[in-house]
Length: 294
Image (cartoon, rainbow, N blue to C red; front, top):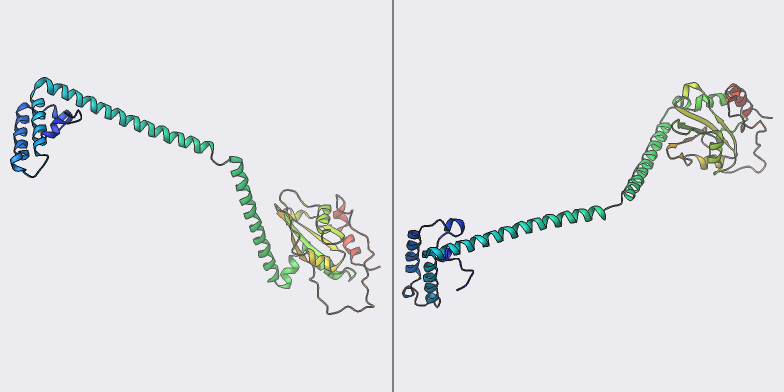
């Protein structure tokens, strides 16, 4: 006989713990009912009819015998415990495998330093885009402003001062520079270094006023109109504190230049060394000298 045969199932009875509680009378009743179903006379064409009735009789003999049935119930119980332990083992194994996969992902996951560097690059790129947007917005605002509004937006009102003192200074070579006073402020030397990339810088004048504590401004005098045009809208300064660069007076393009006309550079005093503690008291006189001709 096959050792894996469940005799309760053969008789059509529930197996396991429930089968062990079935009475002998219920076993006999189930055997008789099953014997009528499997009788060879009712299945003349079934090749398994004879072997099925033999198996039914053998299962009935085991279950109706008290000692044999008890041993069979113990065997079923051991098998159930074995299946249960295997199920627990498989469940534990699955948990261990899951924990191992999580640890491997943590060990071989993205490097925190590389992730931080990537985030820094993304933020820097977004910051550059925001700076470009702010500059474009400010340029559009200046372009659409009325002459009176543009005059009020100049560096400390210097544009009006230069209109009244003479015509010695070519305003097309002068740039208006402004910035927010955040972080490191701009010095005259720092501005000179930035604008010398586009041509010779003659003078740098930084506006000094207690009323503009949050915003810095300066005038940068380039040696030529071409240098002023090249620097306009190009010099950006530090990334964390960009410069807004506008011409004091936009250059007017001419169709030709007369050969006998020569550009005369002003011989007035330079302002390279006037930015310092004593500059504020000399501001008016220096601007006046810049506008005078020799």
